[in-house]
Image (cartoon, rainbow, N blue to C red):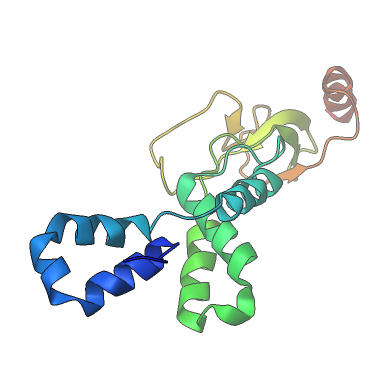
Length: 166
């Protein structure tokens, strides 16, 4: 075994020689495992970098399943995934928990009232959960015609706007 300078060459010598394999079966197994060890951490570092690009301060509530799906799409690309895999990943990402979404402005289309909160939606993951600022009906007229909108006025001014419209 002179002149052998790498693990792969030692493994090749073991594969070629039946006597070495039978006399030193554990060494042969150890050599097989040694070839599984990556020579650098570049692939792992690239994966963590991709994860940090996807999971930002604005997108910090991604579930592990959704983060995995988005990372696979970003890493493999849409062209390298089969249509079935891509559809499964899209469905998986679409079923994200909506419980912690941000507060919005709400407009009652019946009485014109404006208030702050969220129109109640049923979460796929937590269907029985209820939150204090989720509304099914208008607090003033009890109508169900509620529409969310992006707030453009401060929340303290929304109460004044609601009273002006009433």
